Image (spheres, rainbow, N blue to C red):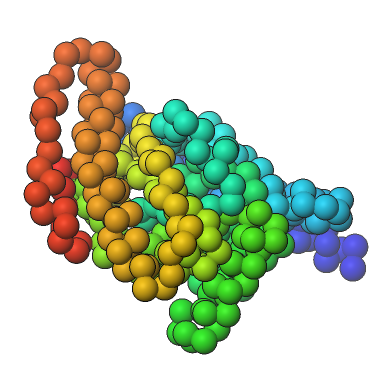
Length: 318
């Protein structure tokens, strides 16, 4: 047994050393090749995610054993670890604009935000509030490291192929919100958009049914489109800062299931009104950084005339 453990440890060590060497070489070549920079940051991101997931498993176990409600901050603690790890190794991060401290003061709540790419895991790392959990498809439960962490930290898993189980999961989430004052973060688009412009996919109603059922406010969170910095089709992964804006909470007190459609449309419209200007802000910041503060020309406004239509952009082409 000792021999087997030693062999496994040696193999892992050799793998990590080679992985680090390849990643370092890719970073060295990134000054001459954008593709090398893409590869380097992807490799660094994978290792950062695995390392932080392992940390999350450990933190969740410790916090669970400590008793009380401390386990409820395990996702927040892991999210912050991922934020700083990614900033260190990739230079990519998100900056939160929350002047009224809705993230810290609105509890419990259902937070909803637009879903663009895999990097939204990092977005959560940068803005995730304490005493909050995510929902995820049930298949993720079986994923090594990440699935273990999500299970231990109280993630609500939903089986999208079974509507009865999904409804049960929503009821469980509503109970947790009410009894434990536990907030939930959800992506109402239901899938990653991989959008090249500032837009939103049509919203599913699950998050809003949950908010109404629990009687808690909906807090919209808008993330600027970041395809100018991250685009897998174009092998683009550049360092930079993406703005996030937390909008005013929308109360659900007194609402019923009959009001969910109107609530969904209200939240989506509010987010559509913000995503265009926020994307311009992010693009301007990226351009200013690239030109080292030289004067730049930014369009004065964006068109939002089509914002009421499902799945349309706000006119900001990236």
